Every structure is written in structure tokens, then in C-alpha cells.
Amino acid sequence: MKVLLIQPPSHNPLIDQFFLFEPLALEYLGAGLTLDNHTVELLDARLEPDIEGACRRFQPEMVGLTGFTSHVNIIKDIATRLKAIFPELFVVVGGHHATVQPEDFNEPNIDLVVIGEGVFTLREIAAALQAGTRLAEIAGIAVPCSEGMVFSTPRPYTDLNDLPFPDRTLTARHRKHYFSEWFKPLASVRTSLGCTARCNFCALWSITGGKYLRRDPEAVVAELKTIAEPNVFFCDDESMCDAKRMDRLADLIDEAGIRKNYFLYGRVDTIIKYPELFAKWKKIGLAQVFVGMEDFSDQRLKTMNKGITTAQQEQAVTILDGLGIMMYASYMVNPDYSREDFRDLLAYVRRLKHKYATFTVMTPLPGTKLYAERYEEISSHKPELYDMVHALLPTTLPLAEFHQEMANLWAKAVPFYRIIPTLARFGLQGMLQRIRLFGTVLKKIRLAHLDY
Picture 1 (tube, rainbow, N blue to C red):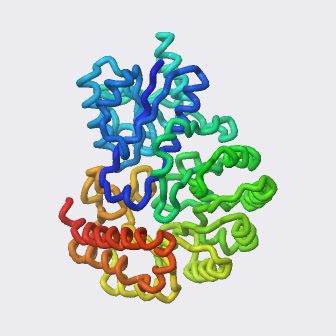
Picture 2 (cartoon, helix red, strand yellow):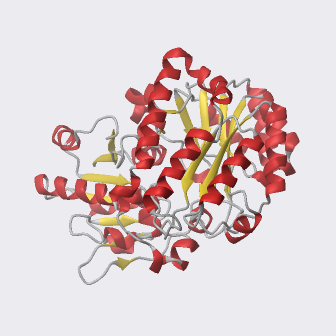
Picture 3 (cartoon, helix red, strand yellow):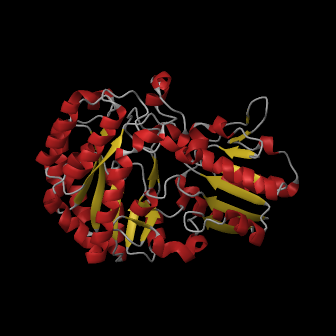
């Protein structure tokens, strides 16, 4: 069977100027299908937007689409366009949003929705289509129906060690384009899935039923040996919470002589609990840790069920600064912020002397406790607005003023002299590019209130 896997374009091209990660989920799916001798192509429509042209050339029998909440309407549109030209084409949708809210894809131009890990599910779908057997007996799917979606038996989450290595030959022509800010070119590697925390604004821990799934360190090293890129992003929900496993992985990477620059997610409490682990990883190439600081108020952190304190935040900053590892500090602004709250957050970030900080809006994403608890307060259900830039819960300030204050945080929280060493990693041309992009971001944030 010929299968075309499509990474849809971003709802806002500006996003792709900040980061463009390889479509790892589709590379996994492609690897699984190839094991069964299917012919697979992967179209990254962020880089090759002619989806209809790709279908005319390749003539697939099945198309697989994936995406987040902000992609929902984009995916529906692609399915509608393709079905109009190729009515016999079998369209399957999976990914994060399909897992947390599959009903949103109950559309006549979508044939099947995959819930959860899709590698083995898609292999079974392809086999059933070839054999002409019943699809409804496959676990982990939902069948669109005008009377309401029909769900099959849920599929337990796959042991990560049972998955094939992602097939990166499917993206060979694009690999030099994948990046995250100054990490370019960048490969993505998954070593775990799920999280031990229970933050109310995050759905990642609930997707795996609260379990923290791990790959064996030996398997991760074997995959790293196949990667040519000098930079590696561990796209785990939280990489370092299993300290024993990550200590073993560091030893194996060192013994194998693998030399990469690593970028990963780490929680504040993990950093202060295992500083020696981060020191060990620094020696083998850990360059940057994305840390969800979220807020400057202990009370708000408690309300989020974040499980950390501001005192611990300060400890984490000190530890990473002392090790020479850059903290990519991320703050999540509550829509109920007053002008004083914005002023206090600005002062807090400056006091911690971050070298890099970003600011998003606390967003009630589908699949989270926050979404369920505050559903009636959500101002818009337009998927494109679920981008962590637009305020979807009631704001204390007038909406335009709220977004102006957000722009002020981006512009003022980290003094420019502290950003220069970070930007210098790009070289002169890269520095100028990032400065221009920074101005575009500020304009977008200031005008965000006009999109509702």
C-alpha cells in the first residue's frame, strides 16, 4: 500500500521562524509501515506546501495527518480538499488533539481517527484495508459517524522499547532546516513519555494514564549513533526525573564517544534534587534546559498544582548558572493579572537575572483539568487561538492592554546586554535576523486582541 504521511502547515508561519522540529511522530509511523513493506512518503507541508501536487505525483491509497489543537481546522481543510480530488483516498487523523478530543474530527471527509500511540494501530489499519477486514475491531480508533463517533476498544500505551527507530530517511531532504532558535540543524529524540507531575494546565501526564514511560538507555544510545546532526533535542515531557536512568544514559553516551549539544526539558524540583546529574550531563554536552517556571507567586503555583515554590525556582537558577547550562525560562501569564502583577513579574524575572526568558498566556488546552474546570468561561473555541499567545479566559485588564503588557514583558524582562551572548551564537547575520523577528513577535502580541 502507498501511504502519504503529512505534517500540516502551522496556523501562523511566525511560529516556524522560532522553531521547526522534525516531524518525529510521522517518522515513527513511517518506520512501522515500512516494516510491513508499505511504500511510504512523508510530506512536511511547512516546507513543501503543495499537498495536492504531492498526492497527484505519489498517488497514495491512504493519507495520515497529525496535529495539535491549533491544527484542527487546517487538518479538516486538507482532508476536504484531498477528498474532493481523490474521493477513494482513505484519510486517517491522529496526534495530540485527536487523542484528547477525537470528537472534533467527526467529519465526513475523515475516515478514521487514531487515539494514542499510532505506530501499531496504523500498521493494523493498513493491513485491514489490504485484506478487506473490519476496521472497527482495531483497538484505539474512532470512526466518524453522523449519529456520533463510534469508538473501538481503547489501546494500552505501547512500551517505548517495542517501537522501531524513527525513519529519518523520510525527511532526508529537509534535515538541515530543522532547528530551535540557535540549535541548527537539530534532531529530535524521544527517551521517555509522560510526566510524574500533575499540573492542571497540561494534558501530557493524563495521555499516558499517569504513567511515566521510559526507553532503555541502550536503545537511546543506539539511536543517537545513527544521527548526523550536531544538536539533539530530547523531546520528552520531562527528561531527568528518573535520575538513575539518565545517569546510566550519560555514562553510555560518554563511553560511546558521542559528542552532541543537548537541549531538554527539566523541572525546577528535578534540578534542585539532582544537581550532580545536571553537572554530569554538562560534561557530555548539555547546553540548555527548558524550565517551566510558570509564575512568581507561590499561591498561583499551588493553584496550578505545579508542585514547586519560588524559593526552589531561585535555587534552580543558581544551579544551572553555576554549571554554565543556559536556562530557557518559561513563564505562563495568568489572564487575571493586574498591572501590578505584570510589574511584579517583570521585577522578579530581572532579579533572577535570566539570560533568556519567554512568556506565554495560560491557556485552557483541551484534555487538561483547567479546560474542564473553566470550560464555561472560555471566550472562543476557534482552534487557531489555542497558541499560548491569545487570552481565552477572562482578563482583568482590557484585552488590548493585557496583550500590550505581554509585549512589554518580552521587550523589557531580560535586559538586552544579557541577551547579546545568547544571540551571538547565531553570528552577526543570525543576531540581526533574531532582532527583526523579535520586533515581529512584539507586534503580533500587541495585536492579538484583534483576532477574536
